[in-house]
Length: 93
Image (cartoon, rainbow, N blue to C red; front, side):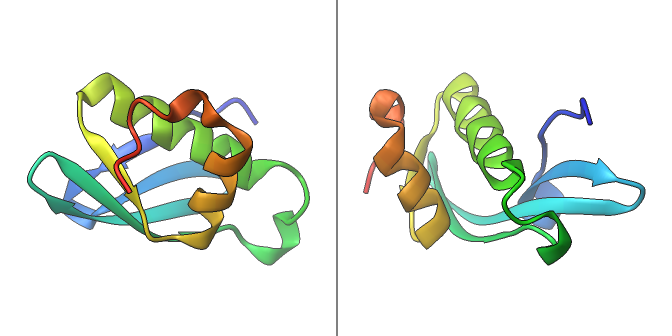
């Protein structure tokens, strides 16, 4: 599994291909230059394999590269950020 996280603005979500047609997703809405991260989904059969963390890291890296800020309304993304304060420069609430 060497896939990269990609932003699909028309779907308001980031996607990480996993295997076959399976994907992990992080949903967001846009408010100005801020992405409000609202919900993360990883198929249950992939739980505990670090896929959610790979997705979160990819999401945060893409947001940083875009020059935007993230607002963490998703509990998973909030928990990831609590363990990875190196993303403080892009988190805005």
